[in-house]
Image (cartoon, rainbow, N blue to C red; front, side, top):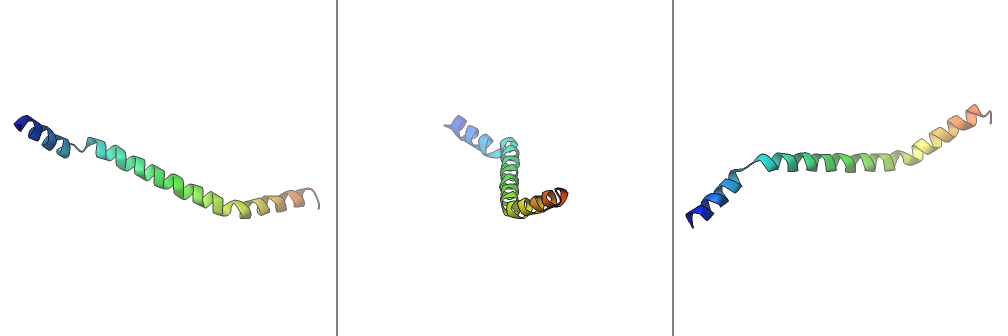
Length: 59
């Protein structure tokens, strides 16, 4: 029984995996933010590039 309690205490104190999980959550949050940003800017960028193409084509 003492070995089980010791193993649980060691598992709770181990913080090595927590850092990896935090970095994973930060990366996921940044990916979601960038995806939202690109989705929001998509219409504006499309019209801006269409305007540039029209000006280059002399229209």
